[in-house]
Length: 345
Image (cartoon, helix red, strand yellow):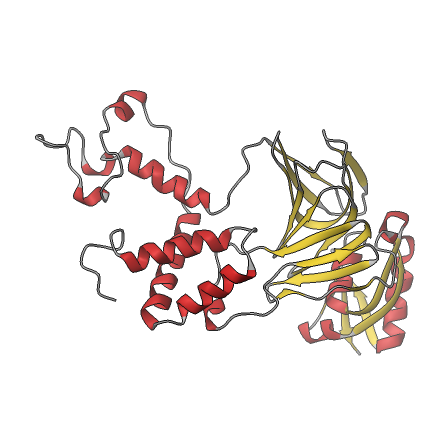
């Protein structure tokens, strides 16, 4: 793609960068998403520019934080970002330090740009986690209570303006204290769940999040971060927000968010040792069961994960459930030193 003054001066790439930042926001509307799609399809040049900016942004994510800059060096740096760094030099004099250290402010700005994609809240972050088979509850400063299932981890950021939680793995029940001025946001994989004062359960599997509402209602939004280039192939109709009311649940994954359906089984049975499944692929069932299993249960072949499971697993009798699987699906469970392997007979 031709551009005469460099990517930092090219209007097309500046527009692409603007779109990428806007798409990263969890507050983006359907209309804005459609407008982005229209812009992408206006010309191949637009799509190419967006793909290049996206590639650069992904590279920035891997950059380590820069080392602390001595105050004297920073004070001597006159670069103000008004022009690209490669076009700038101290007026009337040669640089006072080698090129690699020229424009300290520029390198700091570059790192800040990378961090901006994450929109991290300006609040201290605390992490809470459980071991396999362990349940625990955490009470936050605002009075909200989070119950963590086995092998679960959350990161919590609280401030005067922010109540933000990331469920990095596992399952958790959120009893949210009412505070209209500070919406309660939970990030779980490809979804962001927003509530003011309600109760809901989030189960995060490897490639999806299941959100079940037991009281009140929540808004489930797609987490549009650094979008994969594959998304440029066409607008995904499920890439929009969904409202989930009490007694309903939805599933969110990379393809989008499903329409809410009636919650057939209690979402909080795991708190008393009952793991209920209705027409669920075995691979997802095992992810849940393994949060409580003495030894992880694994499948010999990936195709076995598509077996559809309905029933209840008692946390204290996982071994009995495995035996029932053997009979129901003609499988064989082999216990090894560090795992149990399920294979076809």
